[in-house]
Image (cartoon, rainbow, N blue to C red; front, side, top):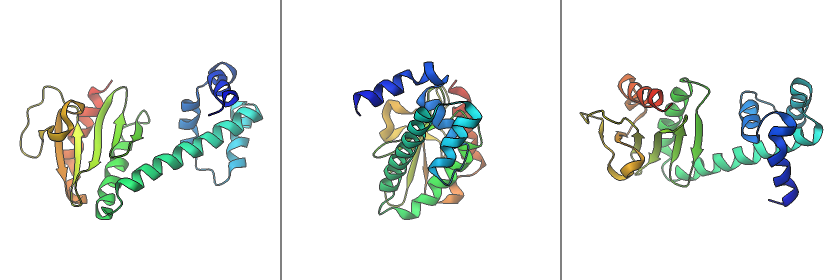
Length: 180
């Protein structure tokens, strides 16, 4: 990243009232087909100058493309698991708008104030769902953290979309509620 762009990003909160991350979250609530539509929205609805609006839209697309690429790479050769991931993300997104999905090379962290869940395609036939549920006993499908170590306190193994049921969603919601 060049120095001028970094300076612009650093000055964004003072000049526009919000950080780049906050603007990206606002853009994610909309579904603009064209770059110019998003720029116009920021300028007319939020009073952002053209230079900042253009930069925000450009960077939001770069971040989104990179995140999508990371997730796509995780499920390469494990395509049968992608519907499980998609269902998890769709259901978790219903908990609130304060969730940040952070894709990494091998997993996706779900963060509120703190990480509360981790989704990882562990094998070609299984997703490991890591949860932070301090003090909750392990029982049945809610196992110990296994390979997640200290990143999570518990792990649930998922092999089909049907495994993402009320019980699992209840545990995820509990982890989400505790992550404030």
